Every structure is written in structure tokens, then in C-alpha cells.
Image (cartoon, rainbow, N blue to C red; front, side, top):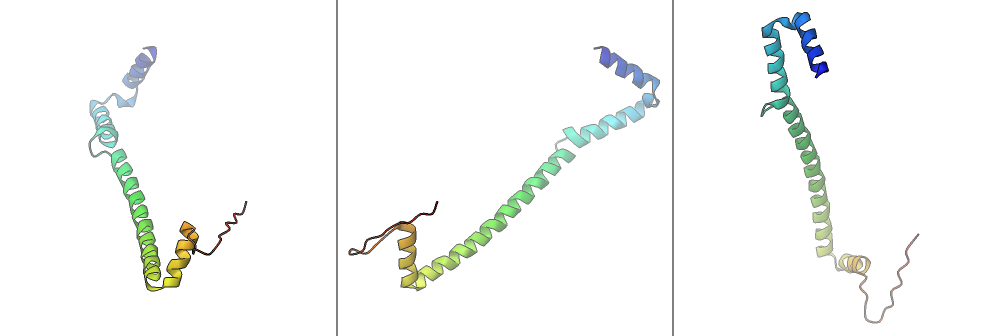
Amino acid sequence: MKRLKDILVRLKNSRLNNKYIIVFVLFVVFIAFFDDSSLYKRWKVKRQTAKIERETEYYRERMAQDSARIEALGNNVENLERFAREKYYMKKADEDVFIIREK
């Protein structure tokens, strides 16, 4: 409470005694932080938009890679067999598969 009184006394004694300047400062603070289209909210939305655009670009690249891989697997039986063996550990009936993992 004492701090508030000190601040008010300083404002009375300072050059900010002009009512118009105080109203203008309060207006700017309100617009900058508390309004529906405040500068802070705009900054947050801009940051989120940039993040979403980066993610979109990443997923477009992944889609292009996956499409190329699907096309390669669909066109070549040997590639499809290799993919099935590596990814799902499939084998032929008369084969033994040994999985070697590096530490």
C-alpha cells in the first residue's frame, strides 16, 4: 500500500501530471497487451503460423519421399521383397534369419 502511495506521489510531482498523457499511455498499454487484436496476440499468432508452415513443408517433403518409395516398391518385386524382409523380418519357408543388432 505504501508503494502505491509513493508511486502516486511521484506521478503528481512529475511531468506526467497532464491527464492527456496519462490517458494516452494507458490507451497504448491497453492496445499493446489487453485488446483482442493486441500486439502480443499478433506476435503469438505470427509465431504459430511460422511453426505450422515449417511443419507443412516438412510433411510435404515426407510425402514426396514416401510417394517415391511406394512407387519404387510397386514397380519392382525385388525391392518389395527386400523391404518386407528388412522391415517386417519376413522370410521364405526354407530360410533362417539371424538379426544382428549393433550396440
